[in-house]
Length: 363
Image (tube, rainbow, N blue to C red; front, side, top):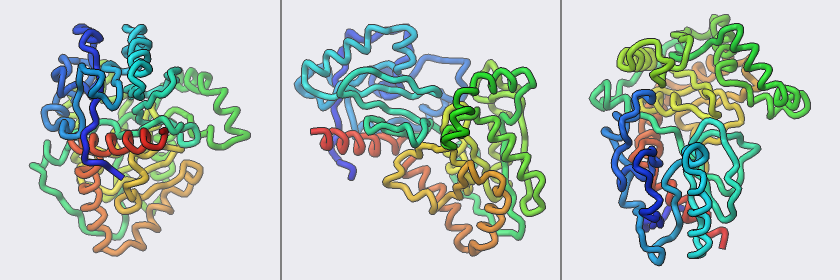
């Protein structure tokens, strides 16, 4: 499915605004992002790995281009550079090539231009369009950062242990405010249960942990925080302490509980994979990256959110029926999938392959 040929994006140098943070796709060409104290770990992510520039490059010559690339994310353009989308769309029409937009944000917004492809993470399976390419949230290679890249295989025990470290509760006030905001989708969910998946992720996390704690069939290693830990404004302690606590908890457990965040996606999933642990994914109608090419069942247990009440039984039955050899192999598969498909340096091969397939299919 994937082509070995690089894809060439047209970017007009006049579109650059030095004061704005450019799309991560532009880091290899316009430099690393400026320091952003409020977004934690992003700097270490791109020092550790970078996008594979054998797969793509940019040009200022329209005749060389396969596509036009908007060099700032859609969220940045909406907020600070609204005319850019029109400029990029016009350039794409002028050369008769598609436009690619970085739509990586928690809440998806329609683009509203023709012949446009959008890179997203998250979203809901029943709302995905043919113009969207789903990539994973960017996740650090925690095994390299904390374990020197050495995989630590766990032997199978009798009772499965499952970890969770992160934001898992809301105040009464925030709960009431969030429920009120979600009311339209909650009412739609009465008729179409797919819309029940649109609850805020912390509600699913709290429910999953409450159900698991009540079961004698699993051992729970939960560290529940009162706020999001990936942002300086909400992190309770230093990022180094919080990250080390997460890593230790995952490595000391058989499985890692993965429940979506505010977006219908999870950086946690790919951090668990980076550490070589088997994730238990609560599937809230999620769009899983590169699912046409990746066999998620080879390294993960996926449980539909509608079946959440049976989560302990599903984990216990899975653990009981899997052989010790298969249990260890799935840990190796988890690490291999992260390196081969989901780590920053692997992404562009898959994204470019999907772009070429979509361009060919639209002709």
